[in-house]
Length: 188
Image (cartoon, rainbow, N blue to C red; front, side, top):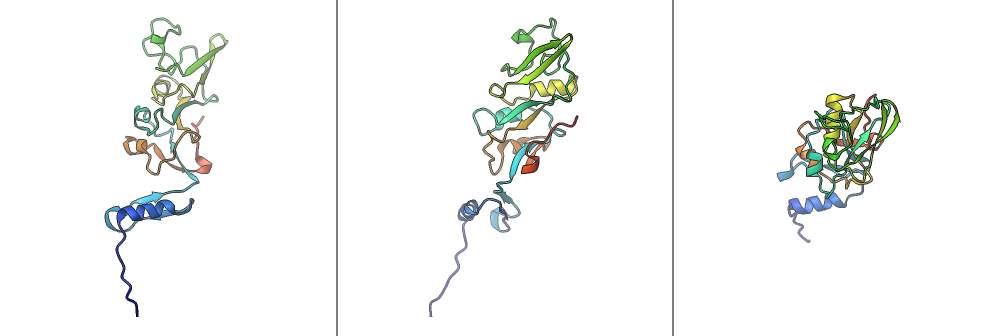
């Protein structure tokens, strides 16, 4: 009769096995150094920012694993007042209302505005220029109605198992969301 022995699985091998399990599965580790830690490989869950919790700390720009953050500013058109003096477009204490770079909030020029009629302007975000710094959203939320806010763009995000930004987010705004809530919208 053959004798069978059981060898404990190493943490590294356990994590490798977890990674090879089919998408749509959630595994909870219950032993060793990974006790109580959830490893989520769900294909239907995505990292997202809850706009009601975001403090625009600037960490989305600096902490993303991508060279240019997957976090981008978006504009809630229904909420916007289309003002000439937009808190997300202009820096504070601007002496002249002109579009010189030193007067603008966005360091990359990602916010574009188009004249509609006096005193209204339409604001749009050039996603290819946005670095996710959140300066415009912070200005809009401080001096405006909050129509500019941040979202994780799912077509850019690597959907890391443990989002590096979520680990350093001081307000806990970055969280896993199911596919049907992959883009949390700003209430208006």
